[in-house]
Amino acid sequence: MDLQNYLKANSYPGRGILLGKIEDYAVIAYFIMGRSVNSRNRIFEECADGIRTKAFEESKMTDPSLIIYYPYRVHADKHIITNGDQTDTIFEYIKKGKTFEEALETRTFEPDAPNFTPRISGMVQGDKAVLSILKKDSEDTARNFYRFTLQKGEGKLIHTYESDGDPLPSFTGEPRSFAIGGSLKEFSDYLWESLHCDNKVSLLVKKIAKDGTVETIITNKNAR
Image (cartoon, rainbow, N blue to C red):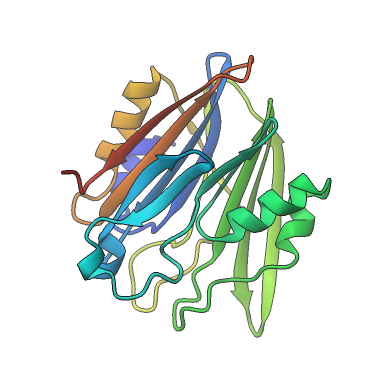
């Protein structure tokens, strides 16, 4: 499938994680979208211990829960990316020698009825990757994990919502595969242009070379 056409056809996929490989380096991409003033009032900010979300205008922030968190953290050669504070849960478990799956067995979907937004998470270590989605299943949590080897020219995408709606319908099926390529800047621009102009908020794209060198591009709709 064509990634840009796929994203342009969906006005509200919510938050999305893409893990893939371009040439000989791994790529991580994470985007956030918003419909409310509170959700749209955010930026990504790089800091010493990862990437965090931050209010663009503090006076407009009405509820920081579920929207202020670290989407990206790294421990040794393990790069963690999620759509919520489960980033910290995974990070702490990995530090203790435990697994990605063990960490997420302690978490569930977000408590934002009636949407019950899924928690999506990913991790890259060398050429190995894993994606996960935790969704509401009746009164329980369905925990799905997808482990795979990164393939050159391919990215796997998972996002929180299948489409716009009220309530928002959760993502269905397995992560979707797309052809990816270009320089880091070209790929970042390509993704940003693919997202709905009114609903997109921020995009993070990371390039991880074989020697561990990391390059980052952050695009924020709110910019001073």
